[in-house]
Image (cartoon, rainbow, N blue to C red; front, top):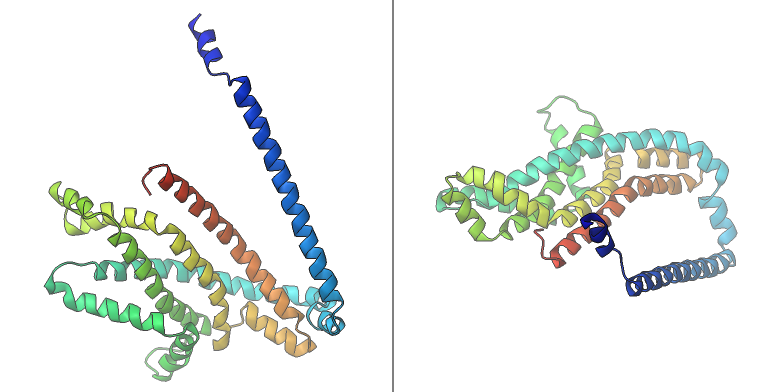
Length: 288
């Protein structure tokens, strides 16, 4: 007799069922209203743009289906190079950014030179535009003739790592400093060394606090990886430029832009989901 009574106790009441039904109806109406309003806005934009004096020329210059179809293959081949550079850069940025954040968090006057160097590095490369870093690294370092001849992809990856590691280091440092000092004290009281405290206690908690910011940096790097084309690498942007030079039509640029949107969209949506989950956990009193 205990099991049936327990099952019956978990049945929602009629009032709760009516509330759930009301919430479902409200959700349906909200979705329908959002869909209708979006379609109305899109329709107005289409009508306004289609009736502008220069729309015919713009359509032929930027949205030619034949040119777009012919340029998909070469641009996609260039995009594969962008993806390779992105993966390598992301791993290297994570490692170098973590190292810089740790150096800036070192305690004691004996580590002042390391903290100063790390601070100077992050301040300098956060202030210099990525495009200038690409030029300095891609054309300046090879001109020294110290290293053997390397492809443009290599120097572009180095420039991305140098620039973005400064941003990631500051984000990680902010997360590490947000960890309450009592966590460090408790870890040291348990016999952990300074390095073990950082690796086991501080860095994991600090990373969880700044996950949305780190993911946004990764989204930005997904777009900026296209700048390696200025060094001559045949990536998606450079392939689009070559197609434009052949066809005298700007549609390949639109195709390249759509490829980058498709590349970035999953991470953008994942960033929103992770941010929402972390906010819910924080509001519920969980550990972030």
